[in-house]
Length: 417
Image (cartoon, rainbow, N blue to C red):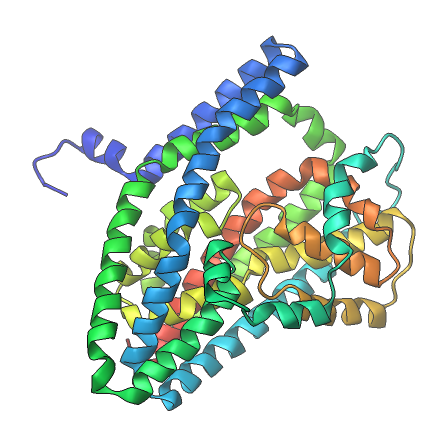
Protein backbone atom coordinates (compact mmCIF):
# COMPACT_ATOMS: atom_id res chain seq x y z
CA UNK A 1 0.00 0.00 0.00
CA UNK A 2 1.42 3.37 -1.00
CA UNK A 3 2.69 5.61 1.76
CA UNK A 4 1.19 8.79 0.26
CA UNK A 5 -2.35 7.60 0.92
CA UNK A 6 -4.21 9.23 3.79
CA UNK A 7 -4.88 6.99 6.79
CA UNK A 8 -8.64 7.26 6.29
CA UNK A 9 -8.44 6.12 2.69
CA UNK A 10 -6.08 3.28 3.63
CA UNK A 11 -8.38 2.07 6.41
CA UNK A 12 -11.44 1.91 4.22
CA UNK A 13 -9.57 0.03 1.52
CA UNK A 14 -8.94 -2.75 4.04
CA UNK A 15 -11.14 -5.76 3.30
CA UNK A 16 -11.70 -6.52 7.00
CA UNK A 17 -12.97 -3.00 7.65
CA UNK A 18 -15.26 -3.22 4.62
CA UNK A 19 -16.70 -6.51 5.88
CA UNK A 20 -17.33 -5.16 9.40
CA UNK A 21 -19.10 -2.11 7.93
CA UNK A 22 -21.12 -4.40 5.64
CA UNK A 23 -22.19 -6.51 8.64
CA UNK A 24 -23.31 -3.43 10.59
CA UNK A 25 -25.21 -1.95 7.65
CA UNK A 26 -26.75 -5.34 6.91
CA UNK A 27 -27.96 -5.66 10.50
CA UNK A 28 -29.42 -2.13 10.48
CA UNK A 29 -31.19 -2.65 7.15
CA UNK A 30 -32.52 -6.06 8.21
CA UNK A 31 -33.84 -4.76 11.54
CA UNK A 32 -35.48 -1.81 9.79
CA UNK A 33 -37.27 -4.10 7.32
CA UNK A 34 -38.32 -6.45 10.12
CA UNK A 35 -39.80 -3.63 12.20
CA UNK A 36 -41.48 -1.64 9.41
CA UNK A 37 -42.86 -4.21 6.99
CA UNK A 38 -45.29 -7.10 7.26
CA UNK A 39 -44.07 -10.70 7.49
CA UNK A 40 -44.59 -11.55 3.82
CA UNK A 41 -42.79 -8.42 2.61
CA UNK A 42 -39.90 -9.11 4.99
CA UNK A 43 -39.62 -12.69 3.74
CA UNK A 44 -39.66 -11.47 0.15
CA UNK A 45 -36.92 -8.91 0.91
CA UNK A 46 -34.87 -11.58 2.69
CA UNK A 47 -35.12 -13.91 -0.29
CA UNK A 48 -33.97 -11.25 -2.74
CA UNK A 49 -31.18 -9.74 -0.61
CA UNK A 50 -29.74 -13.18 0.18
CA UNK A 51 -29.05 -13.52 -3.56
CA UNK A 52 -25.96 -11.37 -2.91
CA UNK A 53 -24.67 -13.96 -0.42
CA UNK A 54 -25.56 -16.80 -2.78
CA UNK A 55 -23.62 -15.19 -5.62
CA UNK A 56 -20.55 -14.71 -3.43
CA UNK A 57 -20.59 -18.26 -2.06
CA UNK A 58 -21.12 -19.71 -5.55
CA UNK A 59 -18.21 -17.67 -6.90
CA UNK A 60 -16.02 -19.13 -4.15
CA UNK A 61 -17.32 -22.67 -4.74
CA UNK A 62 -16.54 -22.21 -8.43
CA UNK A 63 -12.81 -22.02 -7.73
CA UNK A 64 -12.45 -24.37 -4.74
CA UNK A 65 -12.21 -27.66 -6.67
CA UNK A 66 -9.53 -26.54 -9.20
CA UNK A 67 -7.64 -24.74 -6.44
CA UNK A 68 -7.56 -27.79 -4.16
CA UNK A 69 -6.53 -30.10 -6.99
CA UNK A 70 -3.78 -27.91 -8.47
CA UNK A 71 -2.23 -26.74 -5.20
CA UNK A 72 -2.35 -30.15 -3.53
CA UNK A 73 -0.82 -31.99 -6.50
CA UNK A 74 1.92 -29.36 -6.82
CA UNK A 75 2.53 -29.44 -3.07
CA UNK A 76 2.93 -33.22 -2.99
CA UNK A 77 5.12 -33.20 -6.10
CA UNK A 78 7.37 -30.60 -4.46
CA UNK A 79 7.61 -32.66 -1.29
CA UNK A 80 9.32 -35.14 -3.54
CA UNK A 81 8.76 -38.57 -1.98
CA UNK A 82 6.29 -40.71 -0.11
CA UNK A 83 8.38 -40.45 3.06
CA UNK A 84 7.93 -36.65 3.23
CA UNK A 85 4.23 -36.91 2.45
CA UNK A 86 3.83 -39.57 5.14
CA UNK A 87 5.71 -37.51 7.73
CA UNK A 88 3.69 -34.33 7.12
CA UNK A 89 0.46 -36.28 6.74
CA UNK A 90 1.10 -38.11 10.01
CA UNK A 91 1.75 -34.85 11.85
CA UNK A 92 -1.33 -33.28 10.27
CA UNK A 93 -3.66 -36.15 11.16
CA UNK A 94 -2.21 -36.35 14.67
CA UNK A 95 -2.97 -32.66 15.18
CA UNK A 96 -6.42 -32.90 13.57
CA UNK A 97 -7.65 -35.85 15.62
CA UNK A 98 -6.25 -34.41 18.85
CA UNK A 99 -7.90 -31.04 18.17
CA UNK A 100 -11.18 -32.74 17.21
CA UNK A 101 -11.19 -34.85 20.38
CA UNK A 102 -10.48 -31.85 22.61
CA UNK A 103 -13.16 -29.77 20.83
CA UNK A 104 -15.74 -32.53 21.28
CA UNK A 105 -14.68 -32.88 24.91
CA UNK A 106 -15.13 -29.13 25.54
CA UNK A 107 -18.66 -29.30 24.12
CA UNK A 108 -19.46 -32.33 26.27
CA UNK A 109 -18.04 -30.71 29.41
CA UNK A 110 -19.96 -27.43 29.14
CA UNK A 111 -23.31 -28.93 28.13
CA UNK A 112 -23.11 -31.23 31.18
CA UNK A 113 -21.93 -28.47 33.49
CA UNK A 114 -24.43 -25.77 32.44
CA UNK A 115 -27.26 -28.14 31.38
CA UNK A 116 -29.05 -25.71 29.02
CA UNK A 117 -31.61 -28.35 27.95
CA UNK A 118 -32.86 -29.25 31.42
CA UNK A 119 -36.39 -28.00 32.07
CA UNK A 120 -36.82 -26.71 28.50
CA UNK A 121 -40.45 -26.20 27.41
CA UNK A 122 -41.05 -28.28 24.28
CA UNK A 123 -44.43 -26.72 23.46
CA UNK A 124 -44.98 -24.64 20.31
CA UNK A 125 -41.84 -25.95 18.61
CA UNK A 126 -42.16 -26.14 14.82
CA UNK A 127 -41.05 -29.69 14.02
CA UNK A 128 -41.70 -29.28 10.28
CA UNK A 129 -38.68 -26.99 10.00
CA UNK A 130 -36.43 -29.99 10.68
CA UNK A 131 -38.00 -32.30 8.08
CA UNK A 132 -35.34 -31.70 5.40
CA UNK A 133 -32.50 -32.49 7.79
CA UNK A 134 -34.30 -35.59 9.08
CA UNK A 135 -34.66 -36.86 5.51
CA UNK A 136 -30.92 -36.42 4.93
CA UNK A 137 -30.06 -38.59 7.92
CA UNK A 138 -32.05 -41.63 6.78
CA UNK A 139 -29.19 -42.94 4.64
CA UNK A 140 -26.36 -41.69 6.88
CA UNK A 141 -24.13 -44.38 8.35
CA UNK A 142 -20.46 -45.08 8.97
CA UNK A 143 -20.51 -47.60 6.12
CA UNK A 144 -21.91 -45.03 3.72
CA UNK A 145 -19.33 -42.52 4.90
CA UNK A 146 -16.45 -44.92 4.22
CA UNK A 147 -17.87 -45.56 0.75
CA UNK A 148 -18.29 -41.84 0.28
CA UNK A 149 -14.67 -40.82 0.84
CA UNK A 150 -13.43 -42.76 -2.22
CA UNK A 151 -14.57 -40.95 -5.37
CA UNK A 152 -16.26 -42.91 -8.15
CA UNK A 153 -15.32 -40.11 -10.51
CA UNK A 154 -13.05 -37.11 -10.00
CA UNK A 155 -15.28 -35.16 -12.37
CA UNK A 156 -18.31 -35.89 -10.19
CA UNK A 157 -16.34 -34.99 -7.04
CA UNK A 158 -15.31 -31.65 -8.55
CA UNK A 159 -18.80 -30.94 -9.81
CA UNK A 160 -20.25 -31.41 -6.32
CA UNK A 161 -17.27 -29.82 -4.46
CA UNK A 162 -16.63 -32.94 -2.38
CA UNK A 163 -13.37 -31.72 -0.89
CA UNK A 164 -12.43 -34.99 0.81
CA UNK A 165 -12.87 -36.95 -2.43
CA UNK A 166 -10.82 -34.36 -4.34
CA UNK A 167 -8.11 -34.63 -1.68
CA UNK A 168 -7.97 -38.44 -2.03
CA UNK A 169 -7.61 -38.25 -5.82
CA UNK A 170 -5.08 -35.40 -5.63
CA UNK A 171 -2.89 -37.32 -3.17
CA UNK A 172 -2.77 -40.33 -5.50
CA UNK A 173 -2.11 -38.09 -8.51
CA UNK A 174 0.61 -36.11 -6.71
CA UNK A 175 2.38 -39.24 -5.40
CA UNK A 176 2.32 -40.79 -8.86
CA UNK A 177 3.74 -37.62 -10.39
CA UNK A 178 6.48 -37.44 -7.74
CA UNK A 179 7.43 -41.08 -8.23
CA UNK A 180 7.92 -40.69 -12.00
CA UNK A 181 10.34 -37.80 -11.53
CA UNK A 182 11.54 -35.31 -14.13
CA UNK A 183 9.24 -36.70 -16.82
CA UNK A 184 6.23 -35.10 -15.09
CA UNK A 185 7.82 -31.69 -14.54
CA UNK A 186 5.93 -30.04 -17.44
CA UNK A 187 2.62 -31.23 -15.94
CA UNK A 188 3.55 -30.01 -12.46
CA UNK A 189 4.73 -26.65 -13.82
CA UNK A 190 1.47 -26.29 -15.79
CA UNK A 191 -0.60 -27.05 -12.68
CA UNK A 192 1.48 -24.59 -10.65
CA UNK A 193 0.84 -21.82 -13.17
CA UNK A 194 -2.84 -22.75 -13.16
CA UNK A 195 -2.95 -22.44 -9.37
CA UNK A 196 -1.48 -18.92 -9.61
CA UNK A 197 -4.19 -17.97 -12.10
CA UNK A 198 -6.86 -19.29 -9.74
CA UNK A 199 -5.34 -17.40 -6.81
CA UNK A 200 -5.54 -14.25 -8.94
CA UNK A 201 -9.23 -15.02 -9.41
CA UNK A 202 -9.51 -15.08 -5.63
CA UNK A 203 -8.73 -11.34 -5.55
CA UNK A 204 -11.59 -10.66 -7.95
CA UNK A 205 -14.02 -12.82 -5.97
CA UNK A 206 -13.04 -11.27 -2.62
CA UNK A 207 -13.91 -7.82 -3.93
CA UNK A 208 -17.51 -9.04 -3.80
CA UNK A 209 -17.19 -10.31 -0.19
CA UNK A 210 -18.61 -7.19 1.56
CA UNK A 211 -21.76 -7.34 -0.61
CA UNK A 212 -22.11 -11.06 0.10
CA UNK A 213 -21.79 -10.52 3.85
CA UNK A 214 -24.25 -7.61 3.71
CA UNK A 215 -26.81 -9.78 1.90
CA UNK A 216 -26.42 -12.67 4.35
CA UNK A 217 -26.77 -10.50 7.49
CA UNK A 218 -29.61 -8.34 6.16
CA UNK A 219 -31.53 -11.43 5.03
CA UNK A 220 -31.35 -13.04 8.47
CA UNK A 221 -32.22 -9.92 10.49
CA UNK A 222 -35.17 -9.12 8.21
CA UNK A 223 -37.05 -12.30 9.13
CA UNK A 224 -35.90 -12.94 12.71
CA UNK A 225 -36.76 -10.98 15.83
CA UNK A 226 -33.24 -11.25 17.18
CA UNK A 227 -33.90 -9.74 20.61
CA UNK A 228 -36.86 -12.04 21.29
CA UNK A 229 -34.95 -15.03 19.87
CA UNK A 230 -31.91 -14.45 22.08
CA UNK A 231 -34.10 -14.00 25.16
CA UNK A 232 -35.96 -17.23 24.45
CA UNK A 233 -32.74 -19.16 23.83
CA UNK A 234 -30.60 -17.22 26.31
CA UNK A 235 -29.56 -20.30 28.30
CA UNK A 236 -28.70 -22.35 25.21
CA UNK A 237 -26.87 -19.54 23.39
CA UNK A 238 -25.13 -18.34 26.56
CA UNK A 239 -23.90 -21.85 27.33
CA UNK A 240 -22.73 -22.28 23.74
CA UNK A 241 -20.83 -18.97 23.91
CA UNK A 242 -19.07 -20.13 27.09
CA UNK A 243 -18.01 -23.30 25.27
CA UNK A 244 -16.87 -21.62 22.05
CA UNK A 245 -15.02 -18.91 24.03
CA UNK A 246 -13.12 -21.54 26.01
CA UNK A 247 -12.20 -23.25 22.73
CA UNK A 248 -10.94 -19.94 21.31
CA UNK A 249 -8.92 -19.33 24.47
CA UNK A 250 -7.36 -22.78 24.19
CA UNK A 251 -6.52 -22.32 20.50
CA UNK A 252 -4.93 -18.94 21.16
CA UNK A 253 -2.86 -20.28 24.09
CA UNK A 254 -1.66 -23.22 21.98
CA UNK A 255 -0.89 -20.82 19.14
CA UNK A 256 1.27 -18.59 21.33
CA UNK A 257 3.03 -21.64 22.79
CA UNK A 258 4.04 -22.97 19.36
CA UNK A 259 4.31 -19.76 17.30
CA UNK A 260 5.17 -17.27 20.07
CA UNK A 261 5.04 -13.66 18.80
CA UNK A 262 4.28 -14.84 15.27
CA UNK A 263 0.80 -15.74 16.49
CA UNK A 264 -0.09 -12.05 16.63
CA UNK A 265 1.02 -11.65 13.01
CA UNK A 266 -1.02 -14.70 12.02
CA UNK A 267 -4.15 -13.26 13.66
CA UNK A 268 -3.71 -10.02 11.73
CA UNK A 269 -3.49 -12.04 8.50
CA UNK A 270 -6.54 -14.20 9.09
CA UNK A 271 -8.90 -11.69 10.72
CA UNK A 272 -10.43 -10.92 7.31
CA UNK A 273 -11.20 -14.57 6.48
CA UNK A 274 -12.59 -15.07 10.01
CA UNK A 275 -15.04 -12.18 9.54
CA UNK A 276 -16.11 -13.47 6.12
CA UNK A 277 -16.76 -16.92 7.58
CA UNK A 278 -18.62 -15.27 10.47
CA UNK A 279 -20.83 -13.20 8.20
CA UNK A 280 -21.62 -15.90 5.63
CA UNK A 281 -21.70 -18.82 8.15
CA UNK A 282 -19.44 -20.75 5.78
CA UNK A 283 -15.81 -21.61 6.47
CA UNK A 284 -15.67 -23.00 2.92
CA UNK A 285 -16.29 -19.47 1.60
CA UNK A 286 -12.83 -18.33 2.77
CA UNK A 287 -10.79 -21.36 1.67
CA UNK A 288 -9.13 -19.56 -1.30
CA UNK A 289 -8.50 -16.35 0.66
CA UNK A 290 -7.11 -18.28 3.64
CA UNK A 291 -4.72 -20.12 1.30
CA UNK A 292 -3.41 -16.79 0.04
CA UNK A 293 -3.06 -15.23 3.50
CA UNK A 294 -1.19 -18.20 4.98
CA UNK A 295 1.31 -18.08 2.12
CA UNK A 296 1.75 -14.35 2.74
CA UNK A 297 2.27 -15.16 6.41
CA UNK A 298 5.36 -17.07 5.32
CA UNK A 299 4.32 -20.73 5.16
CA UNK A 300 5.61 -22.52 2.08
CA UNK A 301 2.99 -23.14 -0.58
CA UNK A 302 3.68 -26.88 -0.52
CA UNK A 303 2.70 -27.02 3.18
CA UNK A 304 -0.37 -24.81 2.79
CA UNK A 305 -1.60 -26.73 -0.27
CA UNK A 306 -1.22 -30.03 1.57
CA UNK A 307 -2.53 -29.03 5.00
CA UNK A 308 -5.49 -26.81 4.26
CA UNK A 309 -7.56 -29.22 2.10
CA UNK A 310 -7.01 -31.93 4.72
CA UNK A 311 -7.96 -29.48 7.45
CA UNK A 312 -11.26 -28.66 5.79
CA UNK A 313 -12.12 -32.36 5.91
CA UNK A 314 -10.65 -33.35 9.27
CA UNK A 315 -10.21 -30.22 11.39
CA UNK A 316 -13.42 -28.22 11.88
CA UNK A 317 -12.92 -27.41 15.57
CA UNK A 318 -15.92 -25.12 16.02
CA UNK A 319 -18.28 -27.59 14.37
CA UNK A 320 -16.92 -30.45 16.47
CA UNK A 321 -17.49 -28.59 19.73
CA UNK A 322 -21.06 -27.80 18.64
CA UNK A 323 -21.87 -31.40 17.72
CA UNK A 324 -21.50 -32.87 21.20
CA UNK A 325 -23.03 -29.76 22.74
CA UNK A 326 -26.13 -29.88 20.51
CA UNK A 327 -26.57 -33.68 20.66
CA UNK A 328 -26.50 -33.84 24.47
CA UNK A 329 -28.64 -30.67 24.69
CA UNK A 330 -31.41 -32.41 22.72
CA UNK A 331 -31.17 -35.44 25.04
CA UNK A 332 -31.49 -33.12 28.05
CA UNK A 333 -34.52 -31.40 26.51
CA UNK A 334 -36.28 -34.76 26.09
CA UNK A 335 -35.18 -35.83 29.58
CA UNK A 336 -33.19 -38.77 28.19
CA UNK A 337 -30.36 -39.67 30.61
CA UNK A 338 -26.97 -40.41 29.07
CA UNK A 339 -24.33 -41.90 31.34
CA UNK A 340 -20.67 -40.98 30.97
CA UNK A 341 -19.85 -44.13 29.00
CA UNK A 342 -22.63 -43.48 26.51
CA UNK A 343 -21.50 -39.89 26.07
CA UNK A 344 -17.91 -40.94 25.38
CA UNK A 345 -19.21 -43.50 22.87
CA UNK A 346 -21.16 -40.68 21.21
CA UNK A 347 -17.98 -38.61 21.16
CA UNK A 348 -16.05 -41.39 19.39
CA UNK A 349 -18.88 -41.87 16.87
CA UNK A 350 -18.78 -38.15 16.10
CA UNK A 351 -15.00 -38.38 15.64
CA UNK A 352 -15.64 -40.74 12.73
CA UNK A 353 -18.92 -39.60 11.22
CA UNK A 354 -18.05 -35.88 11.19
CA UNK A 355 -14.94 -36.23 9.03
CA UNK A 356 -15.45 -34.83 5.58
CA UNK A 357 -18.54 -32.75 6.37
CA UNK A 358 -18.81 -29.74 4.13
CA UNK A 359 -17.82 -26.34 5.52
CA UNK A 360 -21.20 -24.88 4.57
CA UNK A 361 -24.23 -23.76 6.61
CA UNK A 362 -26.22 -26.49 8.41
CA UNK A 363 -23.83 -29.35 7.55
CA UNK A 364 -23.16 -29.91 11.27
CA UNK A 365 -26.87 -30.37 11.94
CA UNK A 366 -27.04 -33.33 9.57
CA UNK A 367 -24.35 -35.09 11.62
CA UNK A 368 -26.09 -34.11 14.89
CA UNK A 369 -29.39 -35.51 13.63
CA UNK A 370 -27.73 -38.74 12.51
CA UNK A 371 -25.96 -39.14 15.85
CA UNK A 372 -29.21 -38.59 17.75
CA UNK A 373 -30.80 -41.35 15.67
CA UNK A 374 -28.00 -43.77 16.55
CA UNK A 375 -28.50 -43.18 20.30
CA UNK A 376 -32.33 -43.31 20.28
CA UNK A 377 -32.68 -39.56 20.82
CA UNK A 378 -35.60 -38.06 18.83
CA UNK A 379 -34.10 -36.79 15.58
CA UNK A 380 -36.86 -34.18 15.38
CA UNK A 381 -35.20 -32.55 18.37
CA UNK A 382 -32.98 -30.57 16.00
CA UNK A 383 -36.06 -28.35 15.53
CA UNK A 384 -35.29 -27.05 19.04
CA UNK A 385 -32.00 -25.51 17.92
CA UNK A 386 -32.86 -24.52 14.34
CA UNK A 387 -34.16 -21.03 15.26
CA UNK A 388 -30.88 -20.05 16.95
CA UNK A 389 -28.55 -22.22 14.86
CA UNK A 390 -27.66 -19.48 12.36
CA UNK A 391 -26.09 -17.36 15.10
CA UNK A 392 -24.24 -20.35 16.55
CA UNK A 393 -23.04 -21.16 13.03
CA UNK A 394 -21.44 -17.72 12.74
CA UNK A 395 -19.17 -18.40 15.70
CA UNK A 396 -18.34 -22.01 14.86
CA UNK A 397 -17.47 -21.07 11.23
CA UNK A 398 -15.04 -18.41 12.44
CA UNK A 399 -13.57 -20.94 14.87
CA UNK A 400 -13.05 -23.44 12.04
CA UNK A 401 -10.97 -20.85 10.18
CA UNK A 402 -8.80 -20.13 13.23
CA UNK A 403 -8.27 -23.84 13.89
CA UNK A 404 -7.15 -24.62 10.34
CA UNK A 405 -4.89 -21.57 10.13
CA UNK A 406 -3.25 -22.55 13.41
CA UNK A 407 -2.79 -26.21 12.42
CA UNK A 408 -1.23 -25.25 9.07
CA UNK A 409 1.10 -22.72 10.69
CA UNK A 410 2.30 -25.08 13.42
CA UNK A 411 2.98 -27.96 11.02
CA UNK A 412 4.74 -25.48 8.74
CA UNK A 413 6.99 -24.51 11.66
CA UNK A 414 7.66 -28.17 12.48
CA UNK A 415 8.78 -28.61 8.88
CA UNK A 416 11.01 -25.54 9.32
CA UNK A 417 9.13 -23.71 6.56
